[in-house]
Image 1: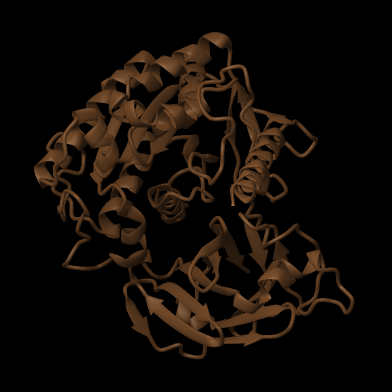
Image 2 (image 1 turned 180 degrees about the vertical axis):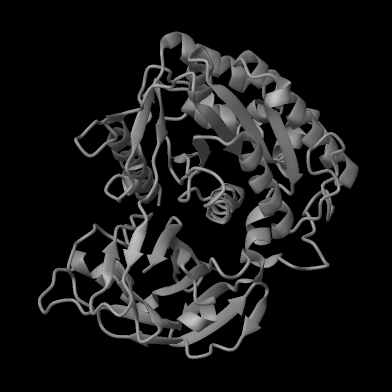
Length: 469
């Protein structure tokens, strides 16, 4: 038994070393593009899901933008009031009182003010919204046009409880958040927006990206389209090595390195790195419990990148294949001009892709999978359609669960009739067919796919935008 355990530990250690080396190396596929310099004409908006995300992902951006004379504002989606572990370590006590978690949100707000002061951002340029930490993705998915707002897990609030916040008293609904995002953009008119990444595994980080996409679509005729720079914070096993390594580069996760994300680096001077370090330490409520992880982002550069939009032509005979790299590399590299079914004799690698098309008034999603996971391959698909003719609050928010040959469709929190949605499986994979009418006849779709086995998830794709032409 002891010998077997030693062997297991040796293999785990070897895998860890390989993982670390894969992130330290700099092959041609890593982000090599340099960031465009800021100018005094730039208006930079940073959207942070929680207080500290703006520092983790964009402290260098803030410093260089301010140095160039650009205007900078930071908008915080939540006050970060649902980190119970951090609360216990910081306060050195255990509590379940709702008011104590509101207190934690106020602590994190005050820490954000101190951190931004270190980076040169005035308090008047900080916008705190105060929506529920660990709840905004559920709000995006389920809570629109409702008289019963989302209820926060720890504060048990259904409305913004912070009197100093822009949105004090606003109900926890998608309508409220979207309204605030649009107001911020209309008032400030940014030409560069930094926001959390669509491949981030944290729900609030996904939600910030999604709300921004909808807000910009609603404002398409009122503001000039800004450049969007998503920054990644939460991704399994990344970044490595952990802890404070200011001399190392921050490179993309190996699993996302071969995807269609166009990564760019913002190089930081040693003085900018140190100031980022000091600003991050201002978040004592977080670093006392998580410094080992948070300081991993104090590197010689910051990293930004997004997926490109996917244009789907109606009634086209072939499917558009896109790159979706994830934890198991289930969805593999992009190939043009691939037809609906895989060619005879296609390699196993070619059976790990996802493709989209619109034909016969149906959205087709083709998923090919590797032989190793073929027997227990199930998946969930999010489909959030946007129409220029219908308010987003009234559009269906569709989630489809596919297990074996069964298809379950939910709109928001409620199961609905499948209305013609069907799943067809074969030896190479599966095809999910969804009537466009079920999605509200959208102009574009924000979609993500999660693959899972009988009891566990092993792959989740980032959200992509599918334009229906």
